[in-house]
Image (cartoon, rainbow, N blue to C red):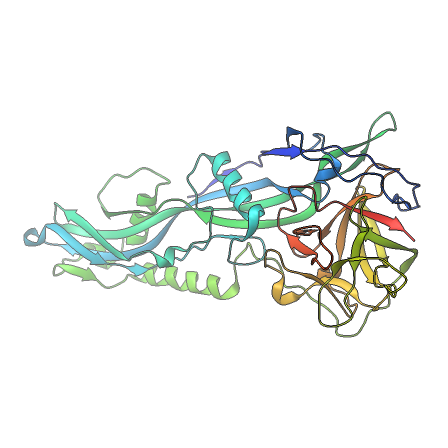
Length: 426
């Protein structure tokens, strides 16, 4: 039996900041002159929830919002065991793996970065359950159960847990036009979404067909797997292990098929055409700069990543970017970032897609979500933006302000505001 909880919104306290900005606005709503000041240091705590205010420092951040959850008692290890009159007492039973549960959020079967941990922590708090918030798998647990069998009978010896799955969305800071026509920065539900899997603390035990157990419990799940209507349940056996019933074998085969086919929390693999794509690019070129400072994104000439560099007459347009194949939905821009200097498109390498702090680089322009970015904008009149990779969901930023520093992806963005950039028309 499963219990399904409705969608629920939670929030985490965030540090916010204020900043000044200036500049003329282009048709895309991006300013074409440098900002006058960088984001100020965090000043106060503010909850991240849809419709709540955010600041310029939040443009390069994201936080999870839980859309749905499902909790299902699951048996991870199991063994049919027969106890006779002369074999009661403590016995150690070696069980067989029935189901393997691995903790995952989004792209793959690992948990990396603050966003994954925040997602699972939010789920646990919302459901009132002690769930795993770091990568782990039930297959790593010992499969031996020691139990005191004080009555003879046919037992199902088990280990089990509550498997928790569901979907999440992304809370991002973006400009919103208010009823009076003015603009404000608010937390909105961004386009990014995905699924998660985790589980609660494992429990172990033994149950007989004739035992009365709570409905929807792990014990009831084990009793169902015992298959009390089978011949094995009604036939006397020597003390010890009982061969798996047809139902146990069937359930195990179903589990193996599910593992072979992938989990429901995985995203579809990024797809791309091998031929270079013809892009429909905007006429304006931009520098993507650190607000109020000279360093800006510079595309690589060789096998390297995008780095912060000082713009000069020797930059050879590597610091100039065009927005291509631009679309807009609910006030959020989506675009391909084409580098004028090397003719490539900004991307996260496919093999690094799930890696925290993976370096932003450029590659031949193809139809690929790894080369698509969501752009979150400050209010009109400001050039401040935050950028998010469409496929990975991670925000872009840098570890420190330094010439040659790599631009990287961060699952939750940079909480110190260094994921906020200025997009300056050139």
